Length: 287
Image (tube, rainbow, N blue to C red; front, side, top):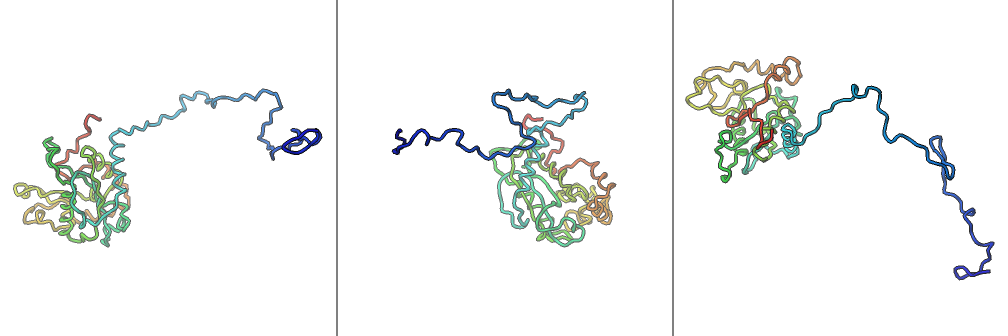
């Protein structure tokens, strides 16, 4: 007899390992139960390659976050996360950047992209300070090129026939100046906005009194006349693309007509901003 935990017991009362019920365990056909004391079965440490695997292995492009296209896409994606605002309500701000315009009206030409969710832009662009291309920008002097550029578009839309400025919204993103051209290019390639790809001239500036008489009116102004400087009295030479041709191209663009898409792909996306150097492919030493 002995005392355990304050009570008297005999050896026959003591619990042994054989008295303990094992935990529930259900063996399956895949279960490998090793006998006690046996050596575990060996298995390969890595999968076996097929014969002549070097001729079958794929070569995938390595992702480089510092690649110029990837840098541009990252800025473009940040823009799409911005909340769209009526183009008439954009408050003044400092800085360069990128922007996207969206149409929400009932003009049948743009019915394919017109909705309040602002999913497909009708036009995208960039804005940088004057003198950027020539390297004469004073970094200590803050300017508001992005706000100025959006304001220019607002004025154009206020005077354009067949359009109502109240039907336009804009997303905009103030960004480091070096990246805005890359972002604009990524946006054009990704969304193929109709006023960038199909109808040229929306982003054009007044060419000036000395050049208006020599140049042809932009196709956009032929389609949506109203800007004073493109009036036939100031620019008598008509566009090389008639309004009817532009309407047909727009319809083919939204219908994804193969011939129209092929024609658009021939032209590398470029900016309408005359102060932007579209041939630039470097960023502060990155290539």
